Amino acid sequence: MSKKTHEQQLAARKAQRQAERAAERAKQRRMVGITIAAIVSVVVVIVGVVLIAANTGTKETPVAGDTPSSLPSEAGPGNKPVSIPTALAAPLKRPTALPAEVDCSYTKGGPAAKKVNAPANGKVKASGTTEVTLKTSVGNLGLTLDSALAPCTVNSFVSLVDQKYFDNTVCHRLTVGEGLQVLQCGDPGGDGRGGPGYSFKDEVFPELKYGRGTLAMANSGANTNGSQFFIVYGDGSGLDPAYTAFGTLDAAGLTAVDKVANAGVVPSADGGPGDGKPATEVRITAATTTPTLKN
Image 1 (cartoon, one colour):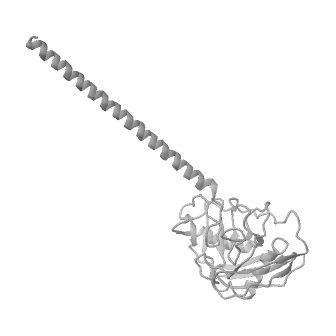
Image 2 (image 1 turned 90 degrees about the vertical axis):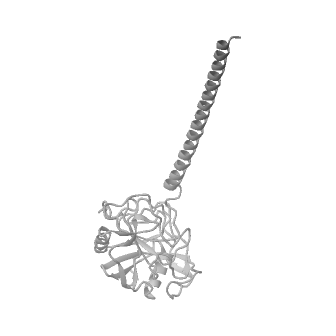
Image 3 (image 1 turned 90 degrees about the horizontal axis):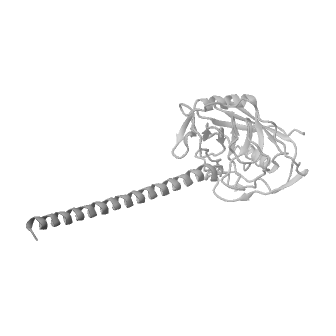
C-alpha cells in the first residue's frame, strides 16, 4: 500500500469518527431538548392545575379567623374599589318560613376575646325585627335584625350588644375587590381571630344572595358562628350561601361605609391589595338596641 493511499484511509477514518461524534452530540442535544420540553410541559400543567385550584376549587371557603375568604380580584388605584354598586339588595326572605319558635343552642369553647356570657339554650321566636345602632367613628350605622331569617343569630347578636361586647372595638377588615366588597367587625382583639367563647350553627339556605346592605355572620367553617359579622356595602356576588344573613344596614350607614371603602385599604400580608384594614379607622364606640317590632 502506498504511503498516499494509507494517509487517505487514515483521513477517511478520522472524518468518519468526527462525523459519528458529531451525530452523537446532535442526538444528545435532541434528547436534552426533548427532556427540557417535557419538563417545561409538566411545569406548565402543574402551574395550570394550581391556578385552576386557586381560582375555582376553594376560593369561597372561609379561612381561619372568622372571615369570608378573599377572591382573586384586583383593587383599583390606591387599593380602592373600582366601583361600588348603588342598588340595594332585595329584601331577603326564606323560601319556606320557619316555625313560630326554633331551638337554639350555643356551644361553649375556645377563649373569649372579651368576657361575655353565652345566651341561654332553648326556644327562640322566629319572627320580628330588632333595631340596633352602632355608634362609630364614621357615623351611626343603623342595623335591622330579622328573626324570621336567622332567629338564633339575632338572639346571640342582641345578647352581645346588651352586654356591651361590641363597645370600643374596631372593624378590622375591609375588602374592595370585585365580588367581595365587605366591612368586617366584631372582634374585640382587632385582628380577626377573636370570638365570644361560644359558637352556634349556621342558619343558611341555598337561595341566599349577598347584595348591597346585607348583614351576615363571618365564620371559619360550617357552624362556627361567634361574634364577627360583615356588612356587604357593594358587591357580594362572589360569596357562596355559607354565611348566615340576619339583617340589613340602612342607607345612611351605607353612605358612611362607602366613604370608608373609597378611602382605601391597608393591604394585609396575605390578603392582596384589596383586603386588609380600612385606611380610615371604623371604631364602634357603643352599640344599642331598641325593642323588637312585630312583623
